[in-house]
Amino acid sequence: MRYVGILVLVILASCKNEKQNATSIDETVSSMWGSFIKINPEHAEEAIPESWFFHDNEKDADRLAVLTVQGKKQASSGLYYWYEQAGADLPKVGTKHIVTDFNGKAKAIIEIKRVATIPFNQITKEYAELDMGTNKEPLEKWQKAHWEFFSKSMMENGEKPTEEMLVVCEWFDTIWPTKNNF
Image (cartoon, rainbow, N blue to C red):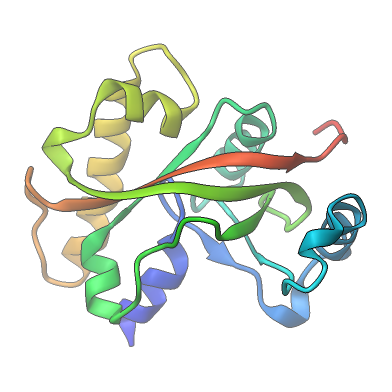
């Protein structure tokens, strides 16, 4: 059960996600989806996408939401180990998600464009730049942040990280950013 909880917390995150409980979804999530399908009626039959925020704290969640709205953050990383432990399918191209701030306010709709499983030590500077939303030392920042997070998570489950551990890399487009200021 612990692995399922971990997967729920990190699927599609740079570091860590927390899904919103269906009963606690902020009204802005439904409103954003309604606005999107009004302009894009070809998606009207689709169920409202899952909503969640990046990371595990307010400062980072809100910062990453801003970078997503600005189109600077275009990728997300999770451990293959989590999917494997939970028996969950890898993300699928074409899947949409609603990214929120830490408080659950909808900020953007994203759509997965590419998924690949890559060893930690083979992540490129180009991918790291898209995941971190910055071109200032992106690979170094990505490695540090993700090694710390992945290590902590794995050690909680009695596992040890390795340079070869597989990372599920998702590239996405921000297809519907909020117009609101943060």
